[in-house]
Amino acid sequence: MNVVTTFKEKKREKQIKYERSLLRELSIQRLHARVKECFGSSRLANGLIMNSGIEEACFDVAIEAYLLGGRFSRFGYYGESQEMARERCNQEERHLIATLYNFFLFWGNGDEGAAGESLYYLCEQYVGGWWQEGFKKGEMKHKLRMH
Image (cartoon, rainbow, N blue to C red; front, side):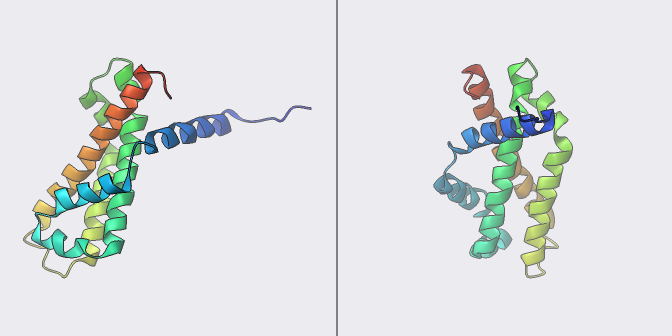
């Protein structure tokens, strides 16, 4: 007798397999270096990065943004520009940016009022950079048919 599976289960299994293949190319050292590179210049964020919980939150958001870019890279493979593909996932990307920004605000010392806007732009740049990297890696995997 055969086992009955649904299309949702198969789609989810395929997505997990693809995400695992994308994550094989990502290392903790690169995540750590990118956090230092992006938030090391900000006085507010630099003091907070010493807290390992905040660094882990940055890692989580980076991985989510990387996988989001990787998922939407198939549109680039089928001819859409990177900007058009990015517009498709604008809401999810904005959610990641807001999550990281609010996490910084929660763990801040209360002096983020003046630096709040620049901190938001740093979060935007950080998430956008990881999205782009995931998009490029995913597009390359699609071109090489390694998905």
